[in-house]
Image (cartoon, rainbow, N blue to C red):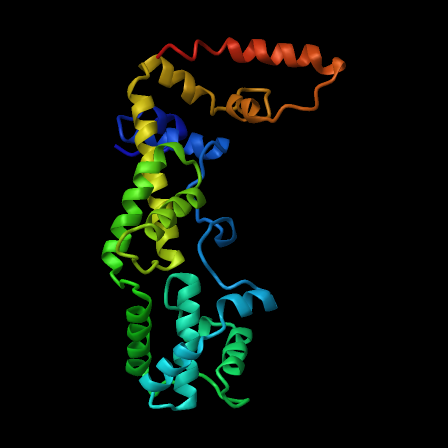
Length: 274
């Protein structure tokens, strides 16, 4: 049997009715399970503007690190620079970034501090060479490149927090905290991986919560809720849209209108009854 209207959806057997509740939750702004903004999370990234202090503190290679890079690359300047910028970036980010992701200001600083000639650019003979450098960096920093295990740790942390975290950015931050303190020091997954995972888990948890709510509702209660989505004759909006309207600034002149509004909302029924 096809479902064609919001009323049909609200009165359909589970899980159709749960979809109605999810739609209502999303439309009312109670929960959002879209993508998270990178800037709203603690995910480590290169800043748009990197200060001189940050360059000195986090991206200056030590003499021992320079010697290590020279030994691993047979002292070929372009390879030395590639290995060093990957090393310092990974130490800062908790993951080994792609060469194209590393800002030029970081490359220039590392090149200068390593004593390499101006104009030296990071290079690797092939993709295999770059992957070898990535493996060398992980080995030196003690980073464990175990994508499956890292995703499992992140997902477990997100699912545990999802019932009380309403935004995907919060779930990403919870996962990052768990990954950072993990005893194996796992390399962080890409942000897009964590973002998609958080959106999926948030959606699943909210759908489950809505299913539980709808399962407790009587047919009459579901009929009332479905009716809230309809626009009655002579009206320009549904009761649901009216309820969602934000309150206007409190003034004495609006007190009566506010009291009438509260009386109408209370008349919709006891929130504690099914």
